[in-house]
Amino acid sequence: MNIGVAGAGAVGCYFGGLLKKAGHHVTFLARGSHLTAMKEDGLFIQREQDTIHITNEFTNDPSDLADSDLILFCVKSNDTEGMAQQLRTSLNKHALIVTMQNGVENEEMLKAIFDTDRVLSSATYVQAFVEAPGKIRQQGRVKLVVGELGQSTTSECLAIVEEFQKAGIDTVHSANILERKWHKLLWNATFNPLSAVSSARVGQILDDENLRKTAGTICSEVVEVAVKTGIPLDREATIAKIFSNAELARDHQTSMLQDRLQGKRMEVEAMCGFIVRQSADLDVSAPTLHSIYSILNFFDRKYVEAK
Image 1: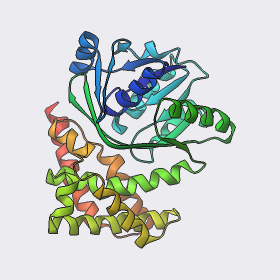
Image 2: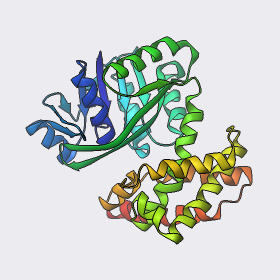
Image 3: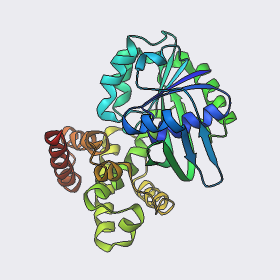
């Protein structure tokens, strides 16, 4: 299978690297010093058990992904429309696109550009980060939940799930992928924005009395929004699961915190802005999340102004 990785950061490089190791032809679309390092020395993926070294097919030209059968769509949510429009003009008309992004809004944008039957979605559970240009470090559990957005591509989606499994990736199929992604968003909304504001890792939030209390308040707010949106879940059981999963990711530096420390734009809208807007539309009170959202928006405006 010809696979293109649109947005070869930590997540794209990790999954693209495993698929490359499994024998697929993978082209990594990247930029900046990360791309330069990969072109010069290849891509290194450091896992807890081994190191994978990938030595070819790195580019900054979206047209180099034209012959892909499958696109791993891994750009930050802020760049979704721009990247999708670039790919639309050159991409093979039969190629499928699987979004591995945070949030639950990217799917609608991708469906509008590529058509529903070409878009798959995934809830992506991986602790990976760019340790240095050209070097990815992964730790902890890895799991993918993948599902189709259109009923006509169920068989294709199942075939892709099988290829991921053959590559050694713990992958399952879901017929209700957006519901699964909502569950992931609840975890992200609880810990990502708070970590970005406080500069704390997940374990530090759990161990600090005040931060943990704030996380609990945010969690209650976002779960209430999800319930009012129509997501079927048990409030108390969901909150308990979010915090038990956090215990498994104590050393995790969230993606929003990584972006802030690196002076990059954060996924403010995907991680919390969407829920803030939903809370207003549904008349659900979410003052704690709204306060953190306003702070993060201020940080992001400073980034844009600096650019």
